[in-house]
Length: 572
Image (tube, rainbow, N blue to C red; front, side):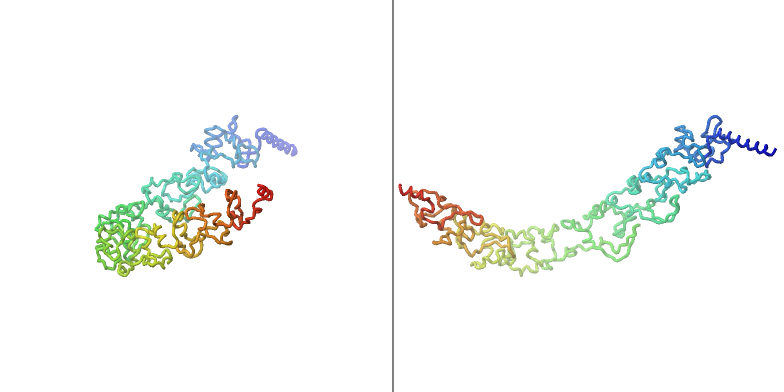
């Protein structure tokens, strides 16, 4: 009997398992293992219809809540695409089976399908850099405490501050993308200062942000990640109604607090809006271009501070109480009071050298100004002012000017006086004429020499040490002192010695005064008289240069004629 009962029990157990195997396609995954058994099928399946999305969402309330927002990936799949849950989350494949199926792998998931496209630096992040418990909304955490936050991808929003800290501490609202992009935090390309209450113009447009927006430090919860000790910039609550809100008043309120009456935002100086002619001292001439601080010196030794910059100034510029009754109030009298204190009787404000007409007549002095001396600046001669006016030497040009000829004319009867050749109208051209050259120099100019410019003979050395002075004094004046001997010494090394002038004239080199029968040892007769010069005087080459051979020459007939030619001449 006992054996029969045991067998009956075993048969019932085996029958139940066979029946279950016939109804279930396999074991449920571990998260659904609590629903194993034939009596639990309807927890997920509709009778005769298979798995039901409504039944899934009755348990997965987090997914249901995201669908009800009509946003996100599940809303798109379930409501718009009308896809069943098991198309991505199939079951009955064993306890180790993963219920989430990524069609192309999680790394290639198209995030824009979830309603938030990844751009810029977001593209390179790992999924769990954003999908982590710290970033889940508080409302989501309270409503879905059973959700495994380390595995879920729910609970996030597309608000930047859900992941990132508010670097501005709520000063500029929560929509970071109004100013910033996903590629980088700075510069904030979307921000336009023109839309702020303070428009940047002039120099303000080039000022670095932190110059006005000072860094502040705090210890606050700036992101879901926790507390941060960090610096942030002050963007709101700044005072900018007046310039002194940011800038120190260098005038210490002595000229009022409306800086823009005189200054512009383009530049502090010059104060383009200030009209100096409205003061007791109108600016004219050179005074217009003088820097303000040249006259308005810094005075005082008080420590002053104003504006949010906290800048401390040791002194301020004086604009009132300045003396300006005479020029000497600001300027040093270079004449040392020898000409009185009324500078304006001679000078104008256009410049120190700008004299009033008929104010000072140098012609009444011992040295009247003529020629180019009229345009010379006073201080070029009067090095130390007029105190040397009566001691200046002016008898000789060299009292002021250096001798450019370096004493070459010192032996002349006038001692080389400059004015014998030059005038005050200009150093060049010289007044030394050809007539004077022929009368006063040892070398008379004639023929082609008359047409030569002075520097052809009076050269300035290009090489050598010392000053390069034009040469006027010559040790020799013969032809070879200037000209090359194209005959290579033929007429100087053999007798009788001859110079260039024995054959050539000054008018032209080719015009000879040479008579062969008179001036040579070989008289030309008969056919010789009709023979061209080059037939006897051949061209030779020496040291790479060609020249014509004139002497010595062998005058024997055989030196020029062959023996056959000589026999024929005898027969004739």
